[in-house]
Image (cartoon, rainbow, N blue to C red; front, side):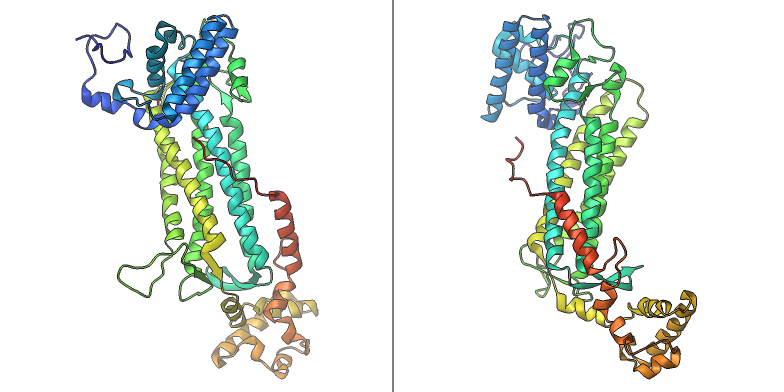
Length: 474
Ligand code: ARG
């Protein structure tokens, strides 16, 4: 049976029978690659314009193609462009509509290109825009951290190693650590963007084309920084998808670590933050509960993004050059990585903006009631000429005694200190006071208040003013 007249022809006359309906469904990507419609139109317009400029078609023909492609865009905006399974993918869907709109001229658009370079072009254009959106999301997250840090420069929080109380910190210092992580995330995205922003268009199926095209014209028109040097590499390369997913995975690692901290902080046991009603949910059974669903979801969603990274690596690793249909699987992965990362960044920014309130009184109590100033006792002796290791041993013994007597270091009277070592003076009590302990850590990058104030200032300058919110991408 020949291809039915009602269905748009996709294949050449070589085919005699239509696809099995289940295989048609299995093969089609239109259900998800319609996401690339705007990019497909942009790339087709650039291609048509180039064909006109290179004399492959007349300029008048190019103008007609461009106008018809813009008509498809308008139809889509008005909800009248509804491709079906028989269109297979977004590239065929646009071409079919074009031919329906303007007849035989529409059949000239695909001159000198293939869906292989076309899909690669669309995907790169889409991802480039998505990366810019994620950068804006990271900036908002950084701003939210900076605003909290601003209010909590002088709030103390216990610092942990091995989740055991270690040394007290300025809360701002703790928050600024996440600003630095987000800064590296932004750098990584910018770096990946450079390799996303290279045009494969004109590589055609795999080998280039005898049609006298100009790849640099389409690349310039579409804002690409360069063109792929090798046509095989151009249509076979999905490194950018992997690199991007790896960069997104690290964003999720960072968001997930902060989520874990917020979840701990919001527990009765820590009590360092209160969840506001804006971002917390209740239990259907236990009326007393307020649950940190937002950070829990972010922590959970990290797994999806890592999964896509692994999926992409695995999908690519066995593929011979050049294009293979396996690549069709890259789209849903990338779309989900972008959506999940953007959603998590937004949710965490909102959580910081209005979802949590730090409890300075509880934090203050926490740092006042532990041995996290023990190192400072040793440092006190070191400053008075005692070798560090000897001081360390002495203080260890002292902590042991205090624990057995149920005392804190600050409770010990001066005589007890002097019994331990004659270098102790009356100023020992002030020296181990948590605020003093924090203030004293003046080394570069340390938690001393002046240092943190400098860090905060540098972070603010680096971030600059927040841009005006942009209209969401179509
Ligand atoms: N839908 C395909 C994809 O997503 C487009 C490219 C198809 N190319 C081909 N030679 N079958 O990868």
